[in-house]
Image (cartoon, rainbow, N blue to C red; front, side, top):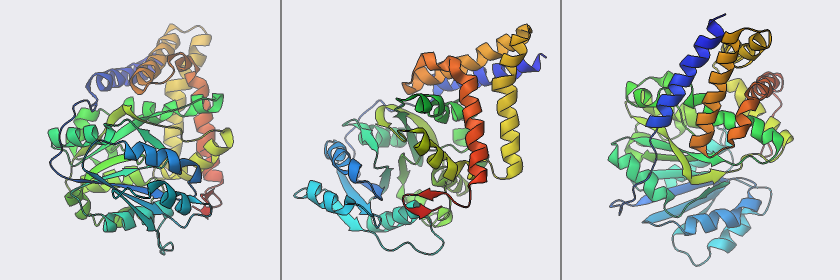
Length: 354
């Protein structure tokens, strides 16, 4: 029964090390090189005004390329309206979806080809930045001599479903990947990234042909990081909770659709998914069950897993008290994994089948 305490304690140790060592963009500098900021957008009418306001407030030598990916709403018209008179913005009408590509990676490839600066920053349309966010992220990449960094935004979670699931995004890698080691280890299996906010040197991106190598990847951010690492580039996820925030999903139905399109691609194979589910049960659910049957090792393991969630919540700006709901969160995640496999051939996203 000691295993139900040992595994959680190992995860708690990794989480504690990452809590202390994760890179956080703090320093600001007068950037000597210009930076291109690119945003792929499809059916994002509700985000246009807030996005443009957030980008307009950025301090630095930035040019913004915003691409409308054949939206079915008023995204393109709103982009033109809210950027009129500001020469820092270039609005692009996206080409029809190319064969073999997914929508986001096709949009990113077009933006990559349209831009020309040495540093490329990609932002999702629902991300909101502090005025110095881009400058701080690029400064950190330069100061650490990395080829890419991925600031992880604070994930806004308001309703109960969001509070159960969204904190697991950061928790999952904070407790399993020793980030400082992974940063230089050049191991694809340890790659972590978040496409909501991604900073990369163009020279590194050129070495893999832009987004060509991930053109059909649903989890394009992680797969892009893997391709960059394979080409001998170095980079890491960093703590972006102080400089960026986003609310990915606002309801359980949106959560199901979002995770439904991606989780079946996250673990490599069906066997990999079974292994992950077994690992989640062994580390996050079994200790509580064993503890309820009177075994002290179970309670120790449960306390350790709650500890990992507490550290993750503090670092990411989340709700610390929700940490005690961790076993319920894991049950919900396991449901989403199974659901993702059941609907993997019928998932619609942004009006397209994924």
